[in-house]
Image (cartoon, rainbow, N blue to C red; front, side, top):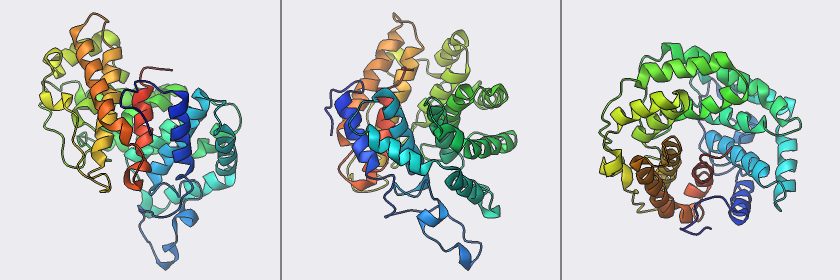
Length: 339
């Protein structure tokens, strides 16, 4: 799909990503539901349960597939795929369908539905839709409001962060959701995210970076660094980063600078490691952008981003186990540091 040397989004790559996403966000099967049956009446298919986010193998991948399309539409509004994206959004983001998605969240058994990964991505999607003219953002706002309220209810009770490389990562979810709090002009939500990030991570020092695990698609270490970049003022972040990754300029810990090897891209867990490479590239680019141009740590971070991109960007398509989600992580990396 792409060249290993690609460093930023190109029109050709944008079209390839868009065609891929258009092929899976409305593809109902195969499907891995996160669904608790409260009774026999709940034995329903994905489209019946989720009239918008029924595709892309699972709910959260469908959400960030829509984010991918919305972002590409903003960046490349004249792309050949733009009319199909607009038609899809007009059909998906209606008050009736959004109300059904909200109703699903209100089920008593759905209290932990998609917490926190899907929550973060839904708010990231809404932040992007708010940048578009037209009714889509307004239509999805009730679902965004419901998810934002879930963060407000959950975070005061979350005494500890979840430091994993998979869906349970709290740092990754808050990093995505922070974009929404800024885009929506919600200072209360932003203060909540900042306070929790500080409580969880301000005292983190000398990260050991015992990673990756065999099915990580996130770096537990770098996800924290990206979250703190977003919530700390530049001077405070520089001080924190020096304590958190004190040997960054020397490319240590080495594990953070070594792209993961993906042995089987048809295995739904092993292919997560392509996502790890791409999400690390996103984090490294964010870290680099926060450092002065002459800081040796910036060169190390930029080089690490390029190496991780080269390892996995050529593999975002090919097998559905990766194809239904990897392009979203590639787009995060390719657009890091851009408006």
